[in-house]
Length: 318
Image (cartoon, rainbow, N blue to C red):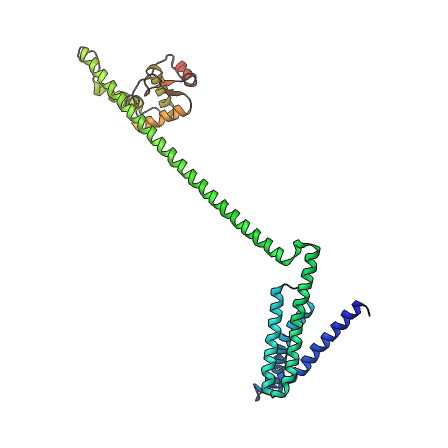
């Protein structure tokens, strides 16, 4: 007889055994389930008894069928099927001991042997199939595939950990760079302020020395308070663009003009003068004087920007 016919006959025999086991054990399950509620009317008790038979015999039959038919199941799946079949068998054994006594134990032991055979056969067939698969392609072997997955999982985990550490290091470096840049900017601003203060002090001492050598008199110069008020009233009317042009004009004529003098010329606070100087330097119109280090001189672009304004006024001074 050919091998396909042998397999077909083996399958028929296995199904016949399963059906015989259900037919033999179902009456006891029916009686035990009905004894749970003896006072119920038959029309209500029979559905309950049918459900009891389907529950117990069904659990054993499902697990048993999967063990015999699902020959490509993973080991974990086979253990699940075996557990379900054994659970159904234990329930049937308890029912047999209550309903049939020791007389039904012989049949239950035979059923246990058949279940054990199915479990063992499933494991053996799976092992044989695994060896054949490994012989054809070792990469498809279950142990090799499991080891490969574990290594890939470990590699992926390490890769993500290294990526996270690298990103954290980059963020820390960026944060430190920003802090360093901020500190450098503060130090530069402080150095400029200190240079401006020193330059203004030198200018004041020089002006004081010059004023001591000049004759005093109210007819030669206007009153300082009136002159300052007049200049302030005139300078407050200047908008920002006019103030910037005026600063360029002042610096073009006197690069060593102090910040305080610039503030008085344009009628703005000293902090505003610093902002305007930064803007003019950022636009490329002025740059630090190499001679004094604290003054500013016009660049070629600044002179070109200032020229139209001077031309429109007709002279180089406001």
